Image 1 (cartoon, helix red, strand yellow):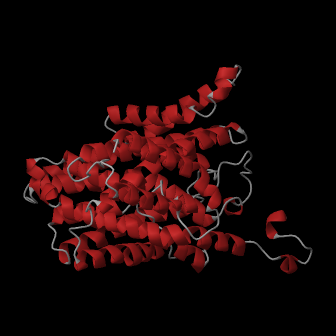
Image 2 (cartoon, rainbow, N blue to C red; image 1 turned 45 degrees about the vertical axis):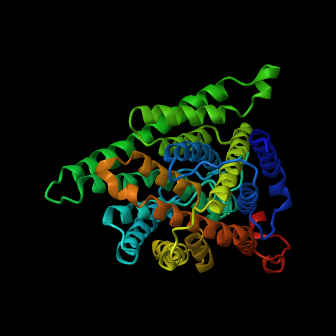
Image 3 (spheres, one colour; image 1 turned 90 degrees about the horizontal axis):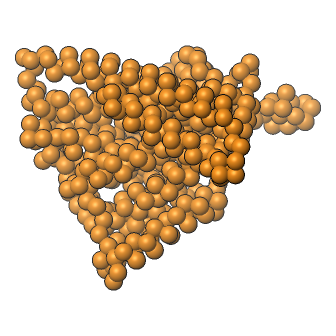
Length: 440
């Protein structure tokens, strides 16, 4: 069969699905990303002659494809967040980043080293790649698109659900903050844990943590401000410019990422900070919806591509190296480690326990984890041979975790979050005047 024509046919179906499925499956216990995986598995299981890139043998291709999906998703996530930036209002985010993420990395590293028998650098790498909440696959629990007006004088939790805000902001930032721990694993493998030499540890703290994070934040803020001045200082005046409305989101994404990476900063952080800066530049402007919608459109098309390919690698044997021990550890990571780490981070808050439990449980794993593993394996050389020889087992375990996350989180997320959103509203008969609390 003609492989090229088959590829075009699959692409057209994926694009059509990216447009139609969100409407069809709205508020239904089904995950349309899961359907893409199923489509990919079906297509690549048939004798069509179409081959799928192998992430084990082609880590650079995997890295570049997943990288592009993530940076587009980070721009869309940042544009969603209408909450004014302050320390108290963003408290759920800081807790998830400062407590949940390191606790997850530590627990997963211990499981990998103590239960699976991985070397310590490989175990740390496993912890790093499964720690971030995925900004691409978390669309069912993300904040709503940007509003045309934001009242900075009222409680921000009255404008948007705490669950959606916490998970969106966490996904936006921890995808960049997983980088230092990925580099930590690479450096540990390269030094063979020679603790008598402290140079690698000083390098990690000084360069990979302080410098690269700092440059990512500063670079994102500068680019976001410049793009905002350009967008809102020059309104669309021609038919062509109106046709291209919203495309500035893509330009801002690529500019922030590339410029920051060129000066050795974390581009993921820069893109998300640029989106926040852009969103906060002028609250009450309907154009933010066009920027957001354009970013989401590109993200969905790219996401469909990655998930179809993921389905293909599944049927071509990605999970073959799995053992019962790996399956058990994968389920523990997904169903025990993240929920407990998330709950520990929420201790002392005044949130309802149901909200805390949902935030803790719905740390969706996905394309971001694919990127980090591909990045680490592509960066590894003979000095980091420990990472290379464990590639098949790591990809098998990660593939299982993402597939299980799509099943568990994808099917239940919309139903659970929407139910809690409804619970936040005060019933009419409790207000005494037929109005809800949000109407006052």
